[in-house]
Length: 397
Image (tube, rainbow, N blue to C red; front, side):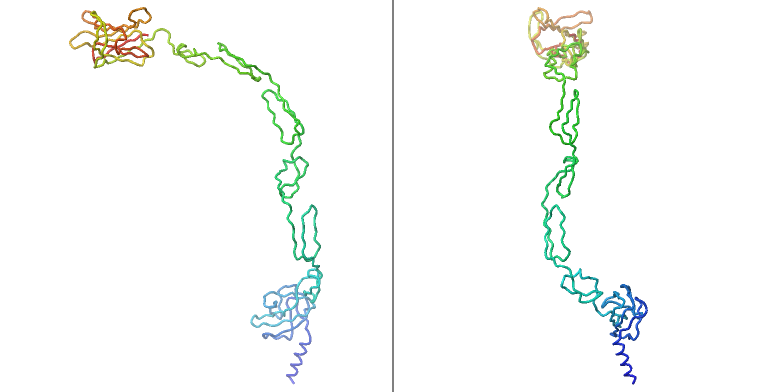
């Protein structure tokens, strides 16, 4: 009956593997139902090289993924339909690219080509390498551990320029290096006077030398004169060269406007002269003066002048204004007579000049060293016989 025919057909399909139709990536199969869990075993007619593949227009994936499986022509594969994803999944089976040389000897594995394959890779166990000057090679195979002992530490710090040319060395990085320092051997040089010689970089064996021959000059003393005296260049001074000095080389021994060895003189030829005006004091000081009756103390007013460039020997001071109601003109004369044998080396005369009859009346004479009066160091203080009046003064050296 019809039911038995269906059973016979299903059993026939189960016992017989169908070869795929279509292409390696667009497979067509007959007798497969698109119901959840329905399976089908077939023989691939062509390889797909792992490219995206469909069965009866439904995607084919590795189990539980969206990755296309690799199909090899002539091999049998079982697939089942997943209704939720509307795709076919390949039943899990052996796959891989390992070869016998990739698997330890005595261990079995499966790959894309076969199952139960026995590996041939030798098991070398643990291996230790100690660095030497030669290359060390380990045999092919599996190693459970490889230990490389550390190289001896190098502490060198030399550079190529510090090692002779052609000589090799190692510093701190285990790289053989070749020196570049030139070998100069014995280098000798003769220098001219004040000459110089640049010693070339490189190795010197210690036998080279630098020589120089120059004239010498012994100690000598020079007395300055009107002409220049020169110590010639190009000689070695092996004794002190002394230029004599003179304590008399001072400004006061040199005429003003002249200079000797940079010292400017301040001596003025002839007699110097100065003049000016000064107001007499309003208070008096005690002076010991001499009149016709003899020596006595008298209160006198004073005039004071300073800042002269010389010390006067003659001073004349005159006021054009006399006492009220008087036509007299008070004046004072100072004379230094120190170069003579006079009894009194300094004489001061205070008097009044009467304009009416152009006569003078000597009132007092001062013999010096008799009161605050002084003439010294470019300044003077002299007595006058009227207070708070303008005096004209003239001073001669």
